Image (cartoon, rainbow, N blue to C red; front, side, top):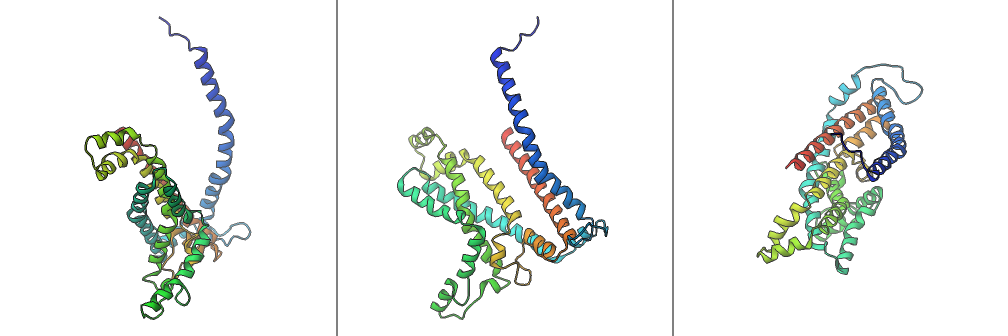
Length: 301
């Protein structure tokens, strides 16, 4: 018995999808090629040369740039700092954002005002945020100086101290981005069916039990997305660090991207900087693959 032909409506849907793919995919592929693939290929090519960015690269050094990067202690300090930012984001920033989201996710005028206040730091440009906090931490005239004076202590320059400068950066990072994560959680919490919460209350569940057994499991996809943004943000952190410390003191507060900027671009060592960029790209690929595999495991459960 022969298979029945697809209905006209189904054929129309298939044709409509095919038309959408044909119309939208080529422009997207063109943009992705121009702004992602070609720059990556160029970076991989330049990383094989000792090149200052002027003229055509001619001094081929092979993998020497990669060897220099991996043998540079400041690079590993930068990696360590990026990992610290990631840990702080997951252990401090995300739980704080979730707590605030649970407090203000319901639709009320007061909660709307609180959401706006908490989200404002994320709206500020990173450079502006860094400059504002550089004045806050200033040991002569900033808020920190006033606090130390009120306590009868000598002025302390937090951003000039190797033991405290990066701690100050993590404070700014938490302040700057927790509102972004909070809004992700609020959007997810507002999508939880009210019937589930009411059913939990009828069964005698308390507030904490509702949060633990109903709300958090329901927003797990949002938590996964938030964690992914935290990882990507830690790898890309740049704009906040530059106005605060510019990688100092003594190169102790560099992240991977500020290291690339300081030791590659500003010193006209474009080949060296390209090698750092390639390493950063490979790290991002590893994170993306691990994230995708985690999502697939969650979906299979």
